[in-house]
Length: 244
Image 1 (cartoon, rainbow, N blue to C red):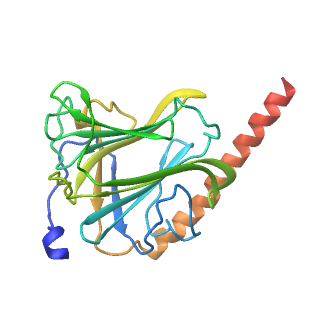
Image 2: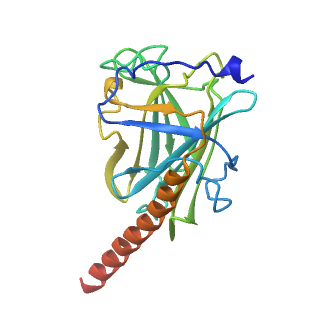
């Protein structure tokens, strides 16, 4: 099955924002897609990537009946439930790139107000909303505490079957991941580029080997550092508000 679904490719990354390439490691703990850390080790099998100081995400991959790409995204400073909040995920399945989202190639997901998932397709110039998609995706988000931060914040978990509905996502592919908090307007993303320009998205490469032990230690240290930084920013914000 692995040989059928995961074709090993060797080559250089194409059509991507320079300096934005990351590795997805094999899943060792299959996550429960419920919008929270179900166990403290659920996402320590992947490499954490930061978007500024406020957002962190991790991805892993594995093979069930299909190749699955699994993700968690934490928005540490978003602690309010706003209908204008949204998550955004842009997909370039085979690193086609381009100056605009291309028809039949590029797709975008938006999760709006933490309740509604909307698919968009490229049309050669921009994005067009579609009423549905045959790509299999499971997702959930919630305001929850986590090992990274004891203050409840928005956490998104999702997983995509990479060969579902006739849409094939390669084992090396490009993406852009972002989020917006309506209480603090502004869109943050990885890479910090234009979601409408696939040439400026980042690369998701993969490893056949589990995440190195040294990197796992680094992930845990980063979790601790992020928790302290977020806690300090939250305390400073509360102190400033009190003084005012």
